[in-house]
Length: 276
Ligand code: FE
Ligand code: FE
Ligand code: ZN
Image (cartoon, rainbow, N blue to C red):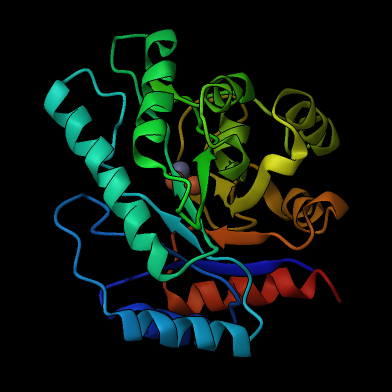
């Protein structure tokens, strides 16, 4: 079995997200630690966080997969954006202490015109600056589609970042099915080979969570546009194969499909039906 859920709005607080997840049939969820377009984070009510932890225990939730805002770019060419992003990463990891033992996923960044070889040490340096021994969170780097100057376009780039991180034991990867497909990994015809490559380059023990999306674009297109499950170029057979793969059991799967609540409810039920 896997855990399945989707992105929820954090505007009503932690407990409200837990309840919303249950209403959708979910047993994990993702949330933006602050407005996805950036800005100031709301103060956390410790009692609200505790209430969510209790609800999660009572309902056998899997690990949560928090997501950093899209504006975060710790390898930005502009010094002020880079500095702002590094501080945001540090602040988010402090805030995650209210819900310890979960995942915090972020996009490695965009190197703009500096090149990945310049950006990779910068990303690792930002992690080493922000991520402390006392943090009870596993930091996840997301596999990216390689659009524009995105870093993390292949497994080798993620490995190169991890190699430079001090707290390696607390770093993993979030595998996005749309991004990797768009990035040139054949999740449709040879997912076993993709996992083998992941294992050879990064190590499968680092694969902690999955973003479960179909794709609007063809294999190797480097585009990154998510599609509803079964309506894109991956298709239901491939997605079912991934979800039920023995090496991915027990992990949180997060839907990032272009959906409303009714649509998410249907997709969550569909994914669960693959285990019957
Ligand atoms: Fe993402
Ligand atoms: Fe994603
Ligand atoms: Zn995406």
